[in-house]
Length: 495
Image 1 (tube, rainbow, N blue to C red):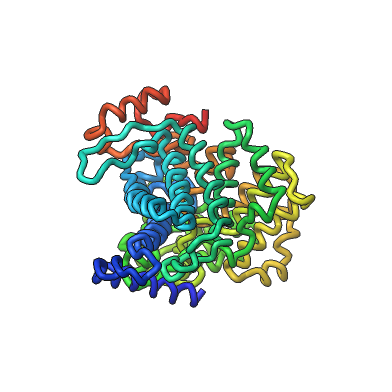
Image 2: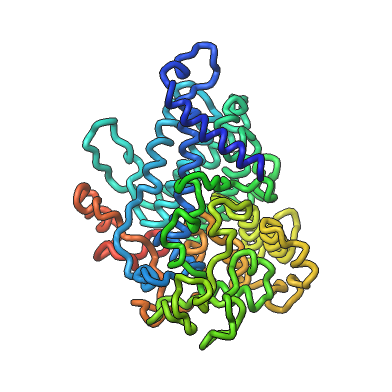
C-alpha cells in the first residue's frame, strides 16, 4: 500500500513536470514513450477513480446506496432530485478519447486496451445512471459547437461489452505497456491485472444485463470455464483502486478535512444496525462510537446510525449540537474516512469481494458452474475478502462471525445482496444502487419525508441538455417512452 501511494505521488509529479516541458519531451526521438498518451492515461485513471468515489460518498449518486444519511441537506435523502451534471464521467471520457486516438494512430495495442476498459467503465456508469446517453457520436471536433444524439441504452450496453472483450484480447498481444509503468498509478503496467479488471467489469455488466439479453448467461459461463483466457480479480492484491494522498482537496478523502460538509454526512441507521446485529468487526473500523451512549433518548447503543429523511435530524436521539462530537448522540464515520489519507480508505473501481458475490449469484441463482465450487463457499470468500481488505479477518474468525445465524449461508438472493452491499461500501459508481434496482435487495426503509416509498430508478439529465441540446434531449425522452425527465421513469434495462 505504501508502495502504491509513493508510486502515485511520482505519477502526479510526473504529470505536472510533463506539462512544464511537454513540447521538448513529446518530440524526443530517442524516447519510446509517447508522453502525451502517458499523461492522458494517468489523468483518466486518477480522475476517474477520485471523481466517482466523490460522487458515491458525497454526491446524489451515493444516496440510494443507503450508507450515508444527510443531516442538513436532506433534500437528496427525500429523493427530490434535481438535474445533476454528468461531467464526472464525460470530462474524463474526452481525455480518454484522445488517448484512444493516439494509441490507434501508433498501433499501440496495450494503450488502446486501457482506453477501451476506461471507456466501457465510464459509459457503463453513465447509461446505468441516466438511461439513453450521447455515445456513438458523443465527441465532436475541437472547437465545434457540437450537440450529440442519444444512443439507445441497449446499443450502449452491447458496445461496451465488446470493449471489455476486445481489451482482454489486445492485452494478450505483444505490446508496450511495461514502458508506461511509470505513468500507470493503478497497476504499474501490469498487463495481467488490467486483463483481470477488463474481465471482472465484463462480468459486472453482463450480470446487469442478464434479464434483458438471452446470451449474457452463456457468455458468463464461457468466462467462468476458462480462467486462463479470462482471469478475474480474486485477490485484494489485484483490487482496482487508488489511495488518497491527502496533499490537496482533489487527492484527499471526500470525507476529510478539505470537505466542509463531513459533519453533514453520517452513517445511516440501516447500515449501522446491520453491522450491530451481526457483531461485525468492520463496524469500529468504519464508524465512530457516540461519546455518551447513555445520553441517547431513543437509542443507547454505542453506535447509532441516523435514520433516513426524518424531521429534526439535527436533534435526533437527544443531540444538542451535531457539529460537536461530545454533544452528538449519533455516530460519525471513523477516522478511516475523516483522515485526508488513510490506508484503509481508497478510491475503488473494482474490489475482489465483488467478484465473489457475482460468482455466488451466478452459481446459486442462475445455476452456472464455476469449477464445481459451491455457492456457499463463494459467498463466504466474498465476506472474508472484505474482512481482509479492512484487516479484521482474524477477529471475524475468532468471534465466529461466519457461523452465526444471520451470516451462515442460506442460499437466498436477499442474503447474498445484503452482504455484497455492506462489503461494497463506497465503491465508485453506486454499484449497490444498481443492484437494488435490478433485484429489490437489500430492502431499504423510507423516511417520513420521503416523497415515495421507492428508490429512484435514474438521475434526471443535466439541465444544460434541455437548453443547449434540446432536440436530441426531447427525442431521447420520446424514444424511451417517458412522459418527462423524471427520476422515476424506467430505462430500457429496467423494463
